[in-house]
Amino acid sequence: MHIRGGKPLRMPVRAQSKIPDIEIAEQELDFGGITRGDSKTLPLTVYNHSDIPAKLILDIRAHEEFEIILPTQTHEDDVVSEIMVAVPEERHLQYDDGVDPADIVDPLGEDEDEEEEADEEEMNRHVQITLKPEKSPLQLQLKYTPENVEEPRDFVLPLRLAGVGEMAALRRVVKGVGVKPRFLLEPTVVNFRTKVIAKGSKPLPFHNDIQISNPDHSAINWSIDREALDDSKVFQMNPTEGSLEPQAKSTVRVTFNPLEPIEYVCRVPLYLDGDKSKPYLMIEFRGEGADAKIYFDRREVILPCTPLEIPAKATFMVCHNGYENLELKPKIANEVGKLPIELNFPDGSNLGVTKQKLKVEAVFTSSKPLSFTTFIDFFDDEGNKFSIPISGTTDNSIFTIFSFM
Image (cartoon, rainbow, N blue to C red; front, side, top):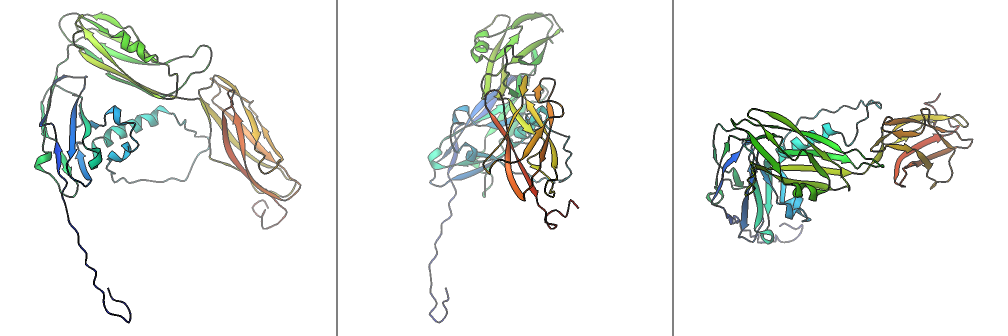
């Protein structure tokens, strides 16, 4: 280190590189035979015997039937999002500033949910796993859902240490094979995604259909564990048992009626021919409840600049999700004082099952120069508030209202 007008100073710098000592407890991941349509998870226990964090890269995108997941009991960990994160992919994005105000998308739309679910499944196949010494061992799970019965699966788990590469200590063989089913059920995972909690005296539950078939050459009697279904309190299935002749098909309806804004998961055993010693397969029901809400077609309402005593008008759409019948009750926030803003409802002020959105016209007129930003608050019958900001300016200065002239 050279100091102006002084002698050079020497500062010793020492560093030591260390490769984390990583170990996988399982010597082999053998799923055995899994009925096509069913799934099975095996534990993947990773130890970090060193005193430094280790980062592992797992890429099983070439094996679409497999997925790495965190056990449910670790979801309460505050740093769960830091343990396993998706490796970002390079994407070419196109931006379009043109927005059609009439093209309003429901934030709980199922199309977006399907895309997000597909993206999430893909992300769980290419992840970076951070293993800190104090968090060792890390209990992961590898899930196998066979899609065909033609070829057995036999490959080395593509797990490597970041900055080092493949290691013998991480080399584990994964085996599994799909078995031709006696009883076909599609899908085995019924995901209702996010649904609004129904309000009213007779709420209508959401429903999905399951297709069942018998590819065997003899009749099959099937049934499910009703107690497991009843314990969920939100899922129902009709019928819960039956008989299928050879090569016959049938439809089973599953309903979902969320009670709280939480995620629901229910695994129900299915038995064949009265043998309840071991489930033939597990049916998984998933869904999430969400409170009814009001939303808007834009983030804010901006009134045009106008001269004094000239009305400034702007229209916006108020939409809803989940209300059977709701009369809009707007209120102008008065943090900046009482403002001369008038709200008109050309199509009425009632939202409901047959009225998903309403046009609202905001009119502002002032005899004094004024510039403001405030909120329009809408309340539902339970007192929940949904707000949208509104801004406006009125003046007699030519520099302010030149756009009006």
